[in-house]
Length: 230
Image (cartoon, rainbow, N blue to C red; front, side, top):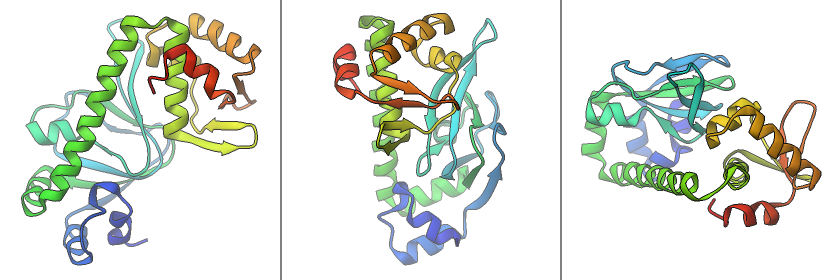
C-alpha cells in the first residue's frame, strides 16, 4: 500500500485533504520491525515520532529491581515518541514491538513544520495526549482505591476494549501477555495475579486458552469490581 493511503487510515491525519496527504507522504519514512525488536531506548534523543501502521508496541521501563514496568500497549493507528519530539528532551521510556510491526517515521523538524502548516493535526495530537493523561489519572486513582481484584478487572476490560476481538465465547484480548506482564500493569506480583486470575476463571468471568490468550466472558461482573472505570 502506498504511503499516502497508509496515512489516510491514521486518525491523526484523517482530516487532511488528498493534496495535503501527498505533501505529508513525502516527509515520512517506512520502518519495519520483527517481534521483540527495540524501536528506541530510554534516554535516546527524541529525533522522530512514529505512527503504528500495523502490529503492537509496548512502552515500558525497567524498575530498580530489574523487573519490567509496562506503561502502555499501543495498536495500529496510534503514535509513539511524541513527548521527546515535542519538548526536545530524551526518551522517557523504552519502546519494544510485541508483534511484527510497521511504522511511519516523521522527524522532529518535519513534525514541527507539519504542525505549523496544519493546525488540525495539532488539535488531534492534543486530544490524544489529553486522553492518555486522563487514563494516567484514572490509573492513579485506581491504585489508591481499588484492591488487586479491582485493578486487574479494570485492566482486563481496558485491554479488551483496545485490543479485543469479538468471538462467540466473548472478547479475546489479542495480546501475548504473561502473568508477570499483567502484574506490571496493575502493580502486583505474579503470584497475586495468578491467584486472582484463577478466581476469575472459576467464576467463568474470563477464560485462558492454550496460547495464554485471555477472553473476557462476563464484562458486567468484572465492571462491578472496578466501578466500571474503564
